[in-house]
Length: 195
Ligand SMILES: [Zn+2]
Image (cartoon, rainbow, N blue to C red; front, side, top):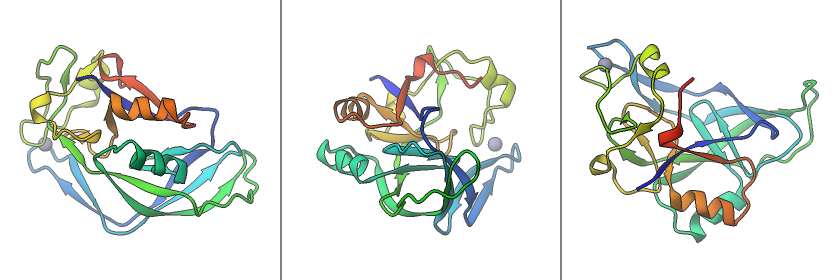
C-alpha cells in the first residue's frame, strides 16, 4: 500500500494558528508531548487572496464544501467534520478582505496507525514509551514508511508518534486529482523528508 503525506501549496492563502483549548499528555519517559486533546474549536486566521479548497494550519486541516462533498462522494474514510472559527481573513498587507469563510470546516483526522519506521521498514531511534523521535534523528531520515499491520485501513490517518499530521492513501490523492481540488499536494512517504 502506498501512503502519502498531505501538504498545501505556497500560492494559496495560508491558514495560521490563533488558539485552541487543549490538554497535553506528557510522556513520563522523555518529557515530550505525545498527544493533544482539543477541548474547544480551533481558531485560525487566513492570509492571502487566492482561495483554495483545502488549508492546513498547525494541528488543523480545513476544507470547504467542495472538498467535503468529494470526501463523501468517493467514500473516503478516517475523518470527522467539525466547525472551525476563522477570526479574520487578510491580504499580504494585513488589510481585511471580505471573503465569506462560513463554508470552511475542520477535517478532523480519525484514522490511526502505529509508529512510523524508516523507508525500508526498519525501526528508528525513538522514545520506547511514546515513540517520540528527536529532531536530529528526523533530519537524517530520507523517506519513511508505515507498517501496514498497524494501520486501521482508513484513507485519512495519522501515526501514533506523529500526532495530528495527515497521511492518506492513494484513494484520497486520486479523488482530489479527479476533482481538481485546489491547494492540496501529496508527497509519497518514501520520498518524504522532515528537513
Ligand atoms: Zn516518550
